[in-house]
Amino acid sequence: MTILLIPACSNGSAPITGKWRRGQHGETVEFRSDGTVALQDEYAGCTGDYKEEKKKRTYRINLDCGVSRASVTGVVSSDGKRLTVTSIEGKKGEYTRLSG
Image (cartoon, rainbow, N blue to C red; front, side):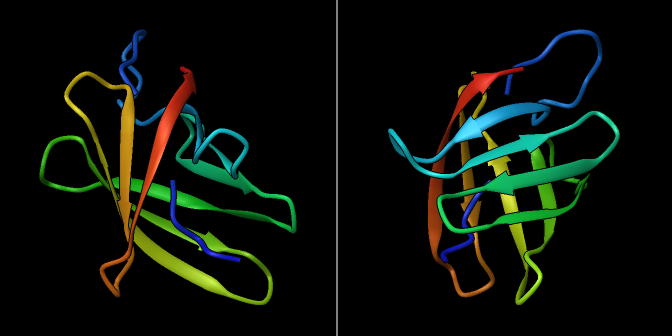
């Protein structure tokens, strides 16, 4: 399993809040307004949390998938439609907003 995550919004919620998908039929991730996150792919699910960093629209995302853990950085595009997630190793993943 590759963990690469990972929105424009209203009601005062964070720009990352909502559901995202990687690729057409790839993993989905949901960032909730309470600071928790849930990721689901065809093999397993992960849970965790996220926190906004000092740089605007940038988040530290921590995931626990049972057998592995990951900490990645997510940056929401200025239009709120794309989320770019970068692992500690520098691998990037692109997500598209589904809702939020």
